[in-house]
Image 1 (cartoon, rainbow, N blue to C red):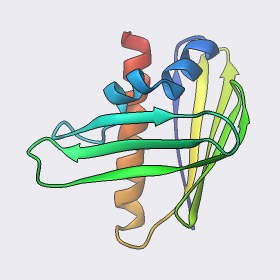
Image 2 (image 1 turned 180 degrees about the vertical axis):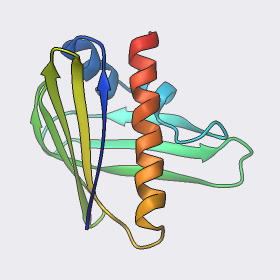
Image 3 (image 1 turned 90 degrees about the vertical axis):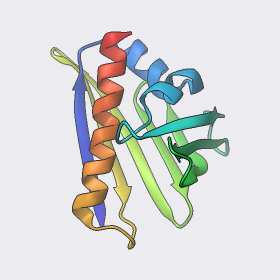
Image 4 (image 1 turned 45 degrees about the vertical axis):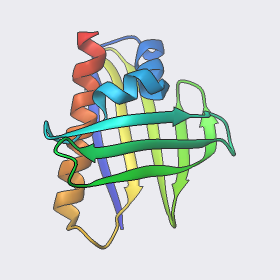
Length: 134
């Protein structure tokens, strides 16, 4: 099953793309709730390049690496990637009201569809706030 989340960012496409693909920015926006944070991020943005974000509970009780490999990159338009046995896609569509960022990903089986949708949407909403506020 595929899950889709999206947000519109009122900023230039070049700035939206830069913030989505720059490790220093990822450290700021990549969290679903205030009690979590991203402590490390790497990006090798090219087909065959790897990415990783270390996500941890601020109290140190749990953490995990969200990591994988880019399979297709069209600058300022599309990022496709594989993570484990799942795939994801991020589309950037410039429009009059800003950039529509749409993330599509394969669901996993540990959490409900609604939990996954809510978590990924929260991260995307943090991303939009970060771009507009920086």
